[in-house]
Image 1 (spheres, rainbow, N blue to C red):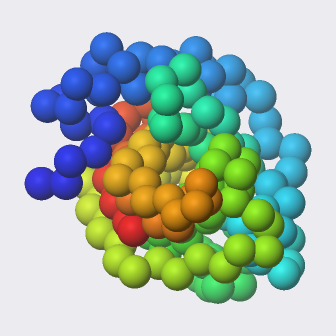
Image 2: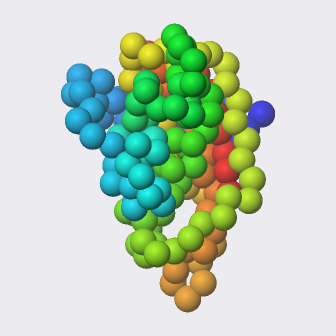
Length: 171
């Protein structure tokens, strides 16, 4: 069992992270995505390879929300007709989520390169294409040297149609 911010045994879940995310989740569900994040923010050279539409900090420190940016014509993620989001797209979105959070909220310079040393993802349901998919995440186990973030563990869950459809953690 992965310990993550949406787990009922985690004190940040019911009274914390998920409840603090509800107003923003509701707002984002009503507001269509106009564009994805800038490619440089998630270390992509081409805009079509950006997998996130938005990212925001929640009221609880080190807790964040993001929305997956879906491009149904992407030749890698949608190489055949699907009625759900590919797991690989969600995994890439989770990786980009950690990168975007490090730059936007932890003052990591844009030219800093990242190495993902490990990631675990467990899906319990499909993410349906006709509804937005979100990632709720928490930054834990931060390691800094000389006042600069050097390493972090990112844990979280994927949400589609108001239900958790999976969980992830990565360092």
